Length: 418
Image (tube, rainbow, N blue to C red; front, side, top):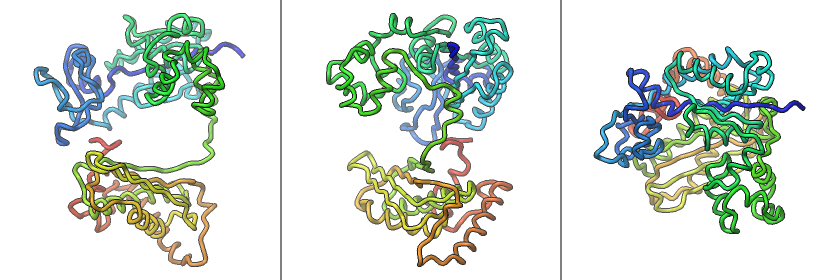
C-alpha cells in the first residue's frame, strides 16, 4: 500500500481566539479567558488566549486561580458562535480535501488524509498544509497549527509535542524521526492516548519513556494492561494501522445514550431526584426521535466536595423499550436503591445501554401494549413540536419547580451558553 500522509489541524486556543476576532483583538497580545462568571469563582475557564497562557493561566483552570495581578477580559461562552466558526473552517477543508478523507476529531481539531492530493496539487505536505492554514487565517482570523505524519498517531504527536512550539506552527514525523527525537521524551502523558494512570503504572516498573516501552518485556506489558498493551507497544515504535477510511467504516458493537450534568449548587436528595427525572424524560425523547430502544440503565451520583465516594448503579431491565413510563419507574427504583439521602449532591449522570433499533422492542406479560402505543404517539408529537418550535415549546409541570434545570439547560449548547 502506498505510504500515507496525514495532517492534524488544531485551531489554536479556539474559543478564546474566536472571542478575540469578534472584538477585533489579537489573541497573542490580549489576555482573555472564556468562562461564565455567573457560575462564580469556581467556574471553569473553557479557553485562554495564547497571551494569558504565557503568564501561566491554564485553559482548563478556574476563575479564582487566575492571579489577581493579571488584567484580563472574561468572555461568556457562545457555543453557537463557535460552531458557526467550526463549520466555516470545515468548508475551507472541503475546498481542498474530500469529506471522505476528513475526520473531525473535535470542534477544534481534525485529521485529513492528503495522500492522493499531493500529486494533484503538485505540492509537498508542508506546502499543502500551509495553504490550508493560511486560508483559515485569511477567512476567519483563526491561527491553526499542523502536525504532519505517516500515520494518525505520529500526526497527532507531531501536533501535540512539536508543532505548537515551532515558528511556522508545523511539524513532521515519520517512524525514524520519531525514534530519533521523541523516544526519550518525558512525560509520557504528552503522547496521545497515554493518561496519567497509564504513566503511573509504567513508572512503577521503571519505564519512563517510549524507548522504555518499546524495549520492555511484552509479557510484562500484557500482564499490566491486557489487550491494550498492543496499542501501547505499537505507538512506542511509532506504528498505527488504523486509517481515516477505517474510522469511517467503523460500526460499534454496542451503543449507549448518556447524559450528565454538574449542578449549579448543592442539591438535597429530593431536589436531585427531580433533576434525575427530568434527565430521564429528555433522554427518552432522544430514543423516540432516533427510533431506538434500550434494556439496560445506569445511574451516577457525585456528592458535594467529594465527601463520600460517588454512588453508581446499573441494571438490566425485563423489557426492551423507549417508554418513558417504564424507564422512569426503573430509574426511580435505582435512585432510591443507591443514593445516600444524608449528603448533598452536585453531579448526576444517567445512561441507557444496549441501545438498538426499535424493531427489537420487547415487553413482558404485564405490559399494557395499548397504553404504550398511546404514550408513543404523544412522545412522537412532542418531538415534532420541539423540532418546529424549540426545546422549551413543550414542558411538563416538574420543569417549573424552583430546582428544576431542564428549561435552563434547553437554552445551552454543550452545557454552556449558546
